[in-house]
Amino acid sequence: VQLQAYGGGLVQAGGSLRLSCAASGRVFSINGLGWFRQAPGEEREFVAAMAWRGSSTSYADSVKGRFNISRENAKNTLYLQMNSLKPDDTAVYYCASSRYPDLYRSNWPTSYKYWGQGTLVTVSS
Image 1 (tube, rainbow, N blue to C red):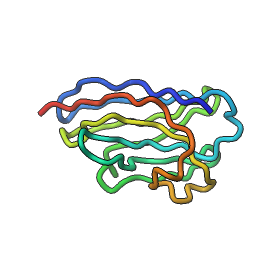
Image 2 (cartoon, rainbow, N blue to C red; image 1 turned 60 degrees about the horizontal axis):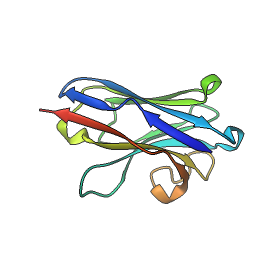
Image 3 (spheres, rainbow, N blue to C red; image 1 turned 30 degrees about the vertical axis):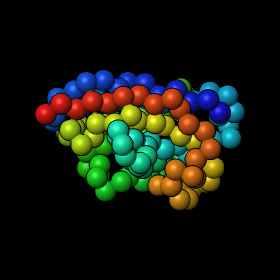
């Protein structure tokens, strides 16, 4: 599975961005996809995840109510709609493909086998 994340950019606090993650290759083998982020000097942290089949989702507490994860299977694409952005949301955002079904351990980076290259989101105050 190959993943390509895009859609990052510079936005003012309170603004919105939508990230996309295009999947290719052995798409039929995907169980779930997740978004992680990594700020400079920080560890990679979980943002949100979604099952590739069905509607199960999971969010980090820090983004609940502000971010929405969705997918469009016909386009093999995962999205992350980010609203009410804060400077603390500044990071490189990565999409990743889970090893496990049903969002099992979806907040653990080690649960993911394939990673995209990341897209930078910068939120100015």
